[in-house]
Length: 89
Length: 452
Image 1 (cartoon, rainbow over the protein chains, first blue to last red):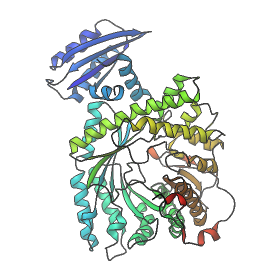
Image 2 (cartoon, rainbow over the protein chains, first blue to last red):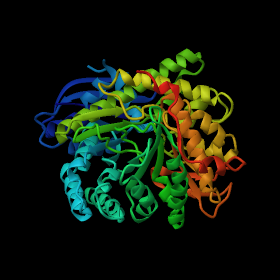
Image 3 (tube, each protein chain N blue to C red):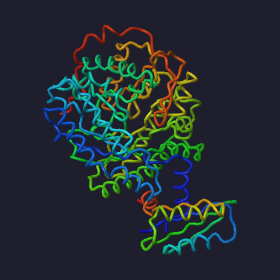
Image 4 (cartoon, rainbow over the protein chains, first blue to last red):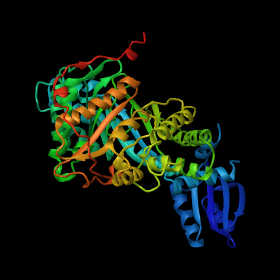
């Protein structure tokens, strides 16, 4: 199962490092990362394989929420299927 | 990989535009709970509902967490209780309402629907007693919803039932006058009722349905409005296209939730209902979509055309997104549940006659309209008859859910709280239809019914 992790907010140093190390602690493997800055908004999107995750998805969500909060960023963790079903025929 | 803009669009829809799955509704057949001893029947009903739906709330919450989609309500719809009541040798039919309420309470679902009777062509045994018991049933329970089908394109309109329902609606409000007349807000009178509707208060589990099914109702007026706001000055064909595309995305999400819930609960997937269902939250309004199309205020001339376009485009967009579409599927216009409608009603831009016209092209009917408390049962019956006639002739579902605000008059306000919202008392038309209503009998099925 794959999850899409989205980090949104004001750009700052070390966002990728903090989010990816939090993922690594739980055995979540990051497969792909894209990031872009639109006006002032920084958006990083990661595709992560969570099949070997040590914790269930909602706990991972809480953990990353906290990481996001510390950086003043908003983090979303959502199942990949929702995007596939909404945006692909 | 999925494109960045698509991901951000979805997140924005959920975070800022109120995209949600309105309800996961489990339909449960109670036909095998029929017993001539009402207490035994009630025990069987309680056991079956609790057994089948024991994981409903938890499963819906798990899906909600896992996929990051809010699922607002979990509900249950059951076989019309009049069918169970028909074999019971008692007038204490309200025992069924109590047991439904108890099961709903136990399971933690938001509503349970099916305290219903289908009398479009006449009263079968049990129907009369059940309808008579509705006001009491709704006053002694919290989560039970009731509906009565009084007409259809195939059968015509049962004017005896129409007459009776005027009285029942009024009594339902009177018995709950200390609680904002909430009884009447949980009672719907239908023409062409559908058997797989997941939305309350009109959900029941039709007799043609499987033993147990999962139906899902999506929502998302806010998303459609936001999409239109971004489009700005496109022509009306562009508006329709945009609504279709948005409805497609919304429905895909509903389909995903429905399939997942069906798999996890090992219950067949029934339908996705494509309805745009507003909530009183600002930004989650069908009226604001119509205004976004270019109307100064919902209710002004042009509203019916705009709503017709919206209703049709929602269906066209949604129908390809789901393998089974059903229920009511269109745009709802419940006044008290829609911030834009509440505003329009308060300013006088939207009145009951305009709403009646709108119901000819929307997915249901006169919904959540607060009327003066001194309205006569005959006038309520006449409102029901008008609405049923629109449904019958246009081969569509129409419904009446009006709430007589006992002790109040035009300008006052009822507040139901939660998804049911609040609404001003709206004036009704002048004139007495008593003689017409008291004639009774049946309006014959229209020519449209003779299709074979």
